[in-house]
Image (spheres, rainbow, N blue to C red):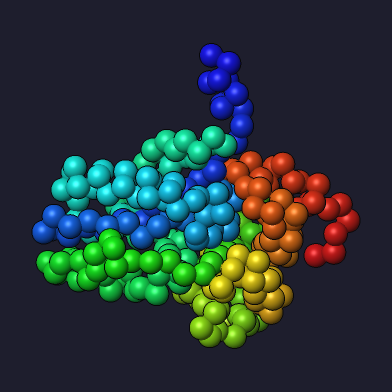
Length: 262
């Protein structure tokens, strides 16, 4: 009972495993994503690979995910979600039978187009690569740019995007968005403005690149979370990869400074 209680108190990490399976009995995993930084149980920043997952643990979690999709004769893209405790034990939560919002970080570290994979598998083709042909390189981060006010409990913001200027895209910086300058952020849909994704050779360099990309992002007309995201990334706990699902609440003093300029 003491062990169970101790594990219940400690906040876990939220880890996803990306899988693909075809109708010919083949299945592979493409590594993990760390989605531990959350607000209101919704992901804020994702990264791949997870700083907490060793190659051995990745192989174990990946094998578990592949076995699961093979057991149900699954076809297509899927995401298996796990909780990872401080002892390195992982616990299955759920499976999402689709590509997730954060799939670009997996694309960045594998060099693969997962939408293309999904279309090929859906058309009845075999998986383009086998497990032994897959590898990960470097580190990727994704930040969700929202029209919301973090200082008011992340209350969604509505209005017209008077000025919208994302950072310059290139091999290391990617912006996925469905809005442009002049569009309205309405109360009827999710207030996400864009996904900002960066890649670099190491986590430290990717973190620096993301901070610069956020500094270059300009949004005028609605409240937004860009300043908050920058504080999360600059937070010592995040920089040191001391992550779990309670990070934002644990670091409130740093993330929500009193009297901060808007």
